[in-house]
Image 1 (tube, one colour):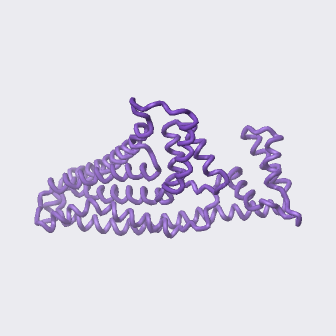
Image 2 (cartoon, helix red, strand yellow; image 1 turned 90 degrees about the horizontal axis):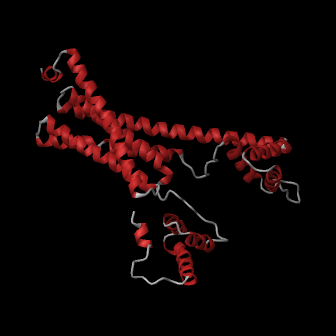
Image 3 (tube, helix red, strand yellow; image 1 turned 90 degrees about the vertical axis):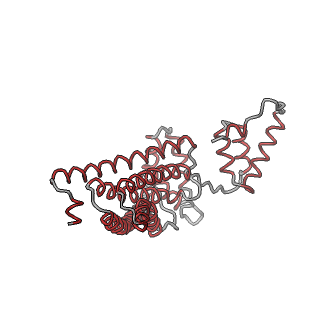
Length: 322
């Protein structure tokens, strides 16, 4: 968040000659792979709006294969973490809120809360695994079809790709040059960049990114399950503590669970934004939006519980104890 301050010169700093400054930036960019990677240096240049540092970073990594994982560690599973965690904590707390609205005893909160937590976690994890596996299978089937069409009628695929480029604003001559480069052949007559061209067709024609060979749907499902259990159990542990301590004050129990849940949802949104390297202000905004989302869902559940109890004209807590 304080990147501009860290990169700006203090008022008493002497102006540096452009050549010396550029050399310093080049050294920073060159040392970046050894320390924290060129991606961090590139992002620092972008945040400071420093074109010279950006050029130095790119010059430093010229001729090397850049492993630019822009999201940072954990970004590959951000969807599973956020969806699993958000669904876990909102679903569990919605049950807590509904039970509180209906004035049911603590034992009902524990019973319904933990039963729902485990059942939904399994369902969410399995659902993420199955949906991810189905998506990967669908993309690979489309890739096989594109490969077959290229083998059977390469001229037709060539023309389709040229047309796609022209429709996206390229002049036909430039589009033809690009596609013909992809379709260069080896001395044996086979396409030199066949696999690259098929992957490119998948993106341009179908808008589908071919999955990495090491993508594992089971891991996605496990991350969703784990995230659901970890975040979803947070409201419940406070009730467990109250139950163990013999405290039966429903108002205090619900108030503490509300505060803990709201803070957790804020941290979930904030952490999600920071994982993808969002600025602090943006991360705070994401945290607040996620907290509001969960709060509205919990409020709706509370009102449903309260409304049903009122509509039935029965004190459910009294009926339970009786």
